[in-house]
Amino acid sequence: MLRTLSVAAAVRCPLRLSRPCPLPGPLLLGLLSRQVREAAGSAGAECGSVLKTPKGTRDHHPAQMALRERLFGTVVACFKRHGAAAIDTPVLELRETLMEKYGDNSKLIYELQDQGGELLALRYDLTVPFARYLAMNKITNIKRYHIAKVYRRDNPAMTRGRYREFYQCDFDIAGQFDPMIPDAECLKIVHEILSELQIGDFLIKVNDRRILNGMFAICGIPESKLVTMCSTLDKLDKMPWEEVRNEMVAEKGLSPEAADRVGEYVQLHGGMDLIEQLLQDPKLSQNKLANEGLGDMKLLFEYLTLFGITGKISFDLSLARGLDYYTGVIIEAVLLQQENDHGEESVSVGSVAGGGRYDGLVATFDPKGRKVPCVGISIGIERIFSILEQRMKASGEKVRTTETQVMVATPQKHLLSARLKLISELWDAGIKAEMMYRKDPKLLKQLQYCEDMGIPLVAIIGEQELRDGVVKLRDAATREEVDIPREELAAEIRRRLETCTTGNPAAPQPLPSC
Image (cartoon, rainbow, N blue to C red; front, side, top):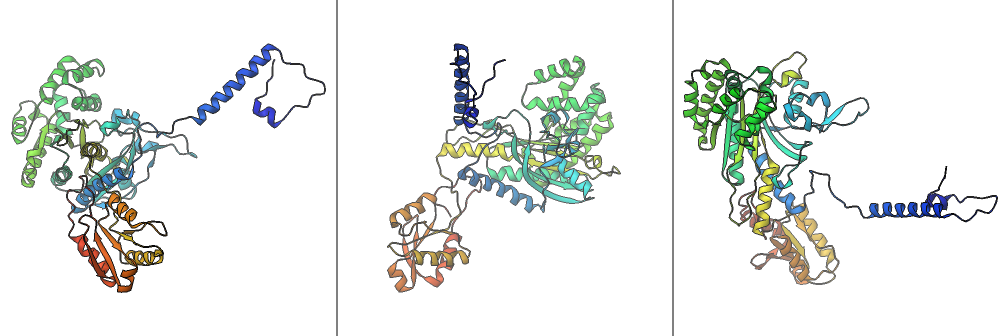
């Protein structure tokens, strides 16, 4: 057997031979030559490897983060306006906590290797961890919001805002309350957020799992197939009815006659008129579950009428949402079209919010099986961001990446100490201020930096200003300058900034801007 040493090993540990080594033959030379080429190729591949993020993830640059922070700000402000408190839960959960909660989507959970005796997984959503949190802490009444990353082993579509790592923005109401009042508020929150973000025309679809289950029952679908039927029906927003029907029959084992009976119902959508029509349906109205669901749906629409938002709500019998834990109302908001003011290509992003009622989920974690009724919604912030990001690129407008309010500048040399002292006074007064990290920067470069970054004001302190006890305050937009007594500078900056208008918090802001 021929033994060979790698070139590196030979250099580190040269062989000491007791007798002269014969010249290598052609076979040995060929072997050594091939090993050297392979080693060089491997090293070259390592040196030339492409740096990238894992599939389905991305970095966010300062301009993108500025836009995202505005989105989060709008969402959080709405949640707080409705009285929600924030919580947080670990990104890791015990694998048994997450399994069997998501129907066919359980296969998308990221499972981790054994970690010191615990089988763990990355959280798939924020709802199941919330239910675990309620059961573990014996909480029976809370209105909470939670904004955090979740993970799904899905096929990503980056341009449509679908990732493997992404944020969810959840609002949930837990507790025993009168029917449909919390549910109506959740729908009002979705309507408020999508209206404030101005991302285009939208429609909020609603249905009820009890209506769905009653519909399946009268169509002859056995109870054992309810969950898998909901998962299939959930594909109607991506596939035509004929394809969904074929999956029901060919893959899920449903009879063609039963599938056709389902098709008669799932293509219905409307408002209060449709609810009244179904309450008179000779088959559906005789099913106890469906009748309960239709009664609550009627009550829900009465509350939504009082909120003044029924124009954006559609009772849609095709809406299923394929998660196991829903027990009542289910919600999904979709964009009907994208505004196209700047001539950009239309971005197809699917649903932008979803949720529903899950009255039995907490009981699955409680040792005594105690129920805590819950209803909530989740805002699809990544999909909304993809729309606004595309719009920002197409418009060519810049977005401020910092919140700096004033630039401290000097017009002459040897004034670093004056700049440091003045900027320290502004920081201590709560003013957001910057300066250039040079001893003697040119005034033109300082003003140019201010313009590039969208900083609205410049505080200029030179030799004359030091003698007069003033600071020259310059408006970056108008280039007007005025001398302000140094002790009044912070107050004058605040006064000027208060006059600035912010506009739509989620829209790109032109430079300069307060």
